[in-house]
Length: 421
Image (cartoon, rainbow, N blue to C red):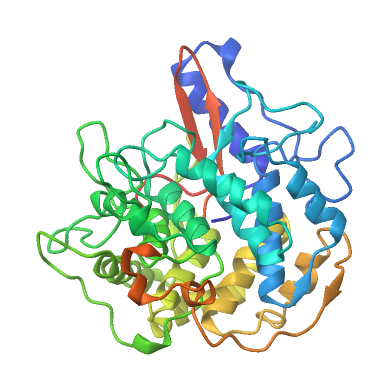
C-alpha cells in the first residue's frame, strides 16, 4: 500500500497538478523534507508526516507484527489518538486535542490501513469497530470506495477497504448498497477483460470517456482485494507455481479476476524483472525509473495468488537493489519489503544481506517486545475466521487529497495512476 516517494516529493507533485487547475493562491506548498517542528515521540520516520503519518505508522506496525515485533505502547497510542470521533482517520492530525470537523480531510486509505494495523496489534477493538463502521457509511453506490468520502471509486481504495473489513471478519457479500452492490462489483467494473491488450489488468479509475487503462499498482491492489486479502497477505500454497491464466468471458468471478490480474503482473515483470514508473509531472528527464514500491506490491500480489515462482525474479531484483530506496523513504518502504519477504517465505532479516526488521524498528521507538515468529500456515482470510466458504463474505496506497478551486478534489498517490509496465 507504501511510500514510493517522500512526502515532500508527493506534495510537490500535488502542487504541480493543483496549480494547473486552480489559481496559484490555492496550490499547496511543498513541506520541508524534515519538519521544522519536533515530531511526536511515538511517530515512525523523521520526515514531514502531513501526507503519510498514519499510513507509514500503520504499515510499520503490520510489518513488525508479521515478524514477531510488538510496537512500543507510545507508538500505538499515537495511532489510536489520530482517529476522529466518527471512526475516520486523516493522513495526519498535528493537534489531536482539536476535534475533527468538516475541514478535516478524512480518507479511506489511512482509515483502512490503521484498522488493519490496530487489529494486528490487538487490544483496540472499539477503535477498529468505529473505523469499520465509518468505512461502511461512506461506501459508494457502485459498492466501492474513493480516496475521500464521496469521490469516485478506485481500485486501490476499494481494495484496501476490503482488506480492512475482512480483517475484522466482515462478510463482504453483506456489505452492500441500497442497490445491492458489493465491493467486488466495484472492483470487477475496473477489471480489463482478457483477450485484448493489457487483458487481466485493473484500472485505477475509468478515464473521462469511460475507458479503462491498465495500471500495475491498481492491479496489484485489485488482485488482493478480489481475494479478500489485506496488507498482511500470505501465499496461497494450494495453487502455488501454477501459471496464472486469463479467464475470458462476459461474467468473471472475483477469484478469476484475481488470477487475471496475476497473469498481467507476471507478464509485466517478465519484461525487465521489475516495474517502472513514468516521470514526475513537469520533469525535464523523461526517462522511466525503476519503481521499487510497485514492484514489491506486485511480488506480494503474485505470491498471495499462488504464483510465488512468477514473483521470484522480481524478489531477487529487490534484494539486490531496494535497500537504498528503503533507506531514503523510511518506515513504509521498509514495511513494503518486509511484507514482500513474508509473503514469499523469504527471510526479512537477511534480505540481500540487509536486516529489514532491524532497520524498520530503528525508524521508531524501541519495540516493546520482539521474537522470531513461526512460519505462517494459513492465509490472511483464514486467520480472521473467514474462508472460501464465505465466498464474497470475506488491500497499498498512500494518497494526498487536496482541494483546489470550487469543490475540485485532487488525489495524488504514491501509487502512480498511469499505466506501468
